[in-house]
Image (tube, rainbow, N blue to C red):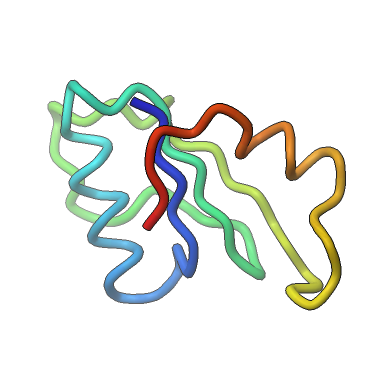
Length: 79
């Protein structure tokens, strides 16, 4: 499952990412935020950090660029 997480640098977004990286059913986590998203602390050794892709979206009022659209394409869920 490909998961999109918006607001990924906040408290809730960070926890969603941490849990998604531990979940084997989640194959890809695309974190959209205004600044780069890092792997959250305390993810655990069973986590797959390589599943995380950080997408910086500086202007939330403009339509998504083609590069952002490529990242979110074919997503199964968005939080």
